[in-house]
Each structure stands twice: as C-alpha cells, then as structure tokens.
Length: 181
Image (cartoon, rainbow, N blue to C red; front, top):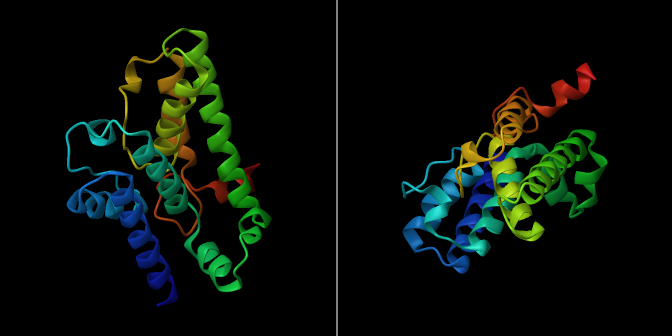
C-alpha cells in the first residue's frame, strides 16, 4: 500500500511539473502516466519533440530517472526525509553514474563530429536519449538513428542494463550487472 502511495504521489507531481512546463492538462496527465511507468507512450507522433521545450525535457529526464529507481528506495527516503539514502545505495549510484557516463560520451561524439553545435545542446539531446533508452521509456526528442554509428549501438546496449530492481524500468536491472561485476 505504501509503495502505491509513493507511486501515485510521484505521478501526480510529474503531471504538475509537466503542466507548469507548458503542457496542456491532458498531455501532462498522459505523459506523467507514461513517464513514471517508463512506458514512453506519447499523445503525439513526434513524442517529446512535438513540444520543442527544454523545460519539458528536463521534467521528462528527472521523472524517467525517478521511474527507473527502486520504489522501495523512494519510500525509505520519503519516510526518513533524507535524500542521502539514494546515494548510500550502490545500485542507485551505479544507475545514475551509468546514465551520466553514457550521456557524456554521446554529447562529446555529437559535439566533436559537428552534428550539434554547442556542447550544451549536444548534452541536452544526449541526456534525454540516454535516460530514455536506459530506462527503456522510449521517449525521443531527435532521431538518434542518424547519429554517428557508435551512438545508436551504445544506446541500444544501455537498454540491456535498464533501471534498478524494484523499478518500473526494463532491462536486466542494474543490481544484476553489479552482482556479475
């Protein structure tokens, strides 16, 4: 019951953030359901690219990361009122670290090959796509299949890593990778 309350609260907060970022009420609710559950369904064919909004992309990234984290960990952090509980968890640290590393690699390649001018724009596109792929959400802001050849392969590989155990994300789950390591 407690996990359901956490899940509903996170979904409601996500919908509110989407609404504040500029989505209509319907789009905000529909995308919140899809973001936290890491389902990736959009009300528009172009997915998040339809909105062309950096604020909406930030909301999506934050809540995809939350959806890919262990919901029991959310409960503990919420109950204890300590954000440090997240960073004490080795699975969450690896999960967050892998997202950052993949996003930085993608951003550097996009910037270095001249695909996207400006490292900040390259990082924004790379972060949205890497979080979306690792959490198996599937939202998109750009057609990453046209990115330099190594990047689509890298993004497909991180889908095998997935999110944390006890999350709504797919993949093998980070804890299994840590145990194999």
